[in-house]
Length: 92
Image 1: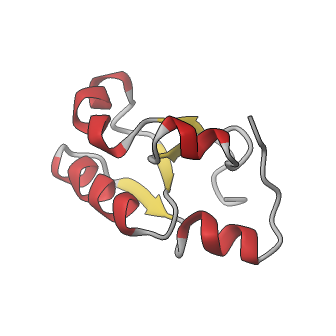
Image 2: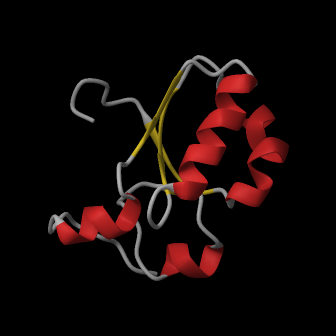
């Protein structure tokens, strides 16, 4: 995250999960809507995807890569791992 401070964090969980706790500055795009929202994202940008445990973010990463996005990464283990590591979470 420190290597590219201009990256965008996308939380691909449902809005209710996002509201329960997310990474600061993350935007919420439900994984079920990622294909529909790709046109609102810069294909040259750098993205960090997060879900609860890693399954949905992996699927969203594949969709983005198939659409030509090259700099897409995931939070390994998702929010579960993030919180277990004691990293900050924003609620609401």
